[in-house]
Length: 294
Ligand SMILES: Cc1cc2nc3c(=O)[nH]c(=O)nc-3n(C[C@H](O)[C@H](O)[C@H](O)COP(=O)(O)OP(=O)(O)OC[C@H]3O[C@@H](n4cnc5c(N)ncnc54)[C@H](O)[C@@H]3O)c2cc1C
Image (cartoon, rainbow, N blue to C red; front, side, top):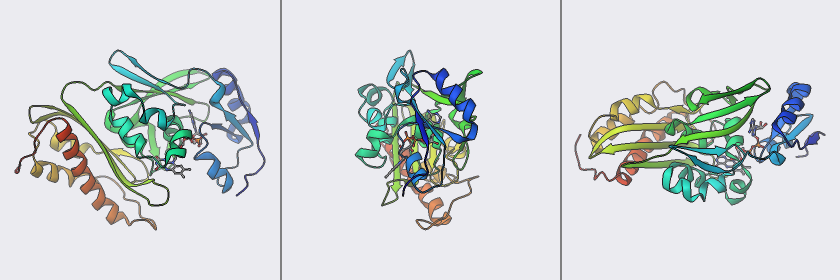
């Protein structure tokens, strides 16, 4: 449980960090909260020669509203998200999701940027990012680009970030009108990671769902947006029969993972069940009284 020897630097600017990344290539790794990277180093699954700690670079953490968007710095911890009054009011899906992560120590150290860049298939935050249609800002020596959450996660622990880039912030829309959100998961007992987790954001007019985002994690090697479920619900009156039918499409297109914690078949079953429950919970929060029928 002792990592291989490594060097450690604390740049004060992004440019310094970019230079260090460029000069060390694949031997360098960004360090944020360290709660995924350090366990991997201790298990010798990652052996970087240089750690570039972002903690001394100002402007990379914090939560602020810019018009109809909320911007969250990549170094913002899960605890800061969980306890943010701004987010509780304007984007409650994020505090709901952050609360479900690990335990208090993990939430105090782990960062949103680290969680997204690491792209663990069982991480919670990616599901919320997908449901909200979040945008992620990647900066590198050549400039910057904004990536949609749906284009960011490419596969098992693989994202669209290039090795030269750093994820610096995340942008989510302010929720307004009659909306509801829910994040529900079946946690793996020891770590709390999601065996399956489903995030839902929806908006209603009366009992009709006018907009919906559904993000699923834990089921496949990469988190995904359950587009087929969204299509079945959007524009229709929310009712238990409709929600149940729509949720049966939750794993459509996915390749369910199987491991010692759950078979692929069981994960697919959980995805259907938790998609239905999360939509129901979000609908109730939005003020829809779910009466029987379709
Ligand atoms: C006991 C335990 C339980 C946990 N339970 C859960 C859980 O239930 N749900 C859950 O979702 N997570 C869980 N986690 C993971 C936790 O949320 C981590 O904090 C998170 O996944 C990684 O964030 P970090 O800031 O610690 O990143 P680090 O460990 O510092 O970095 C992770 C990876 O991302 C890269 N990276 C970090 N920041 C950036 C950036 N800004 N730009 C580019 N690359 C970057 C690093 O180079 C590294 O490869 C758990 C962790 C532990 C130790």
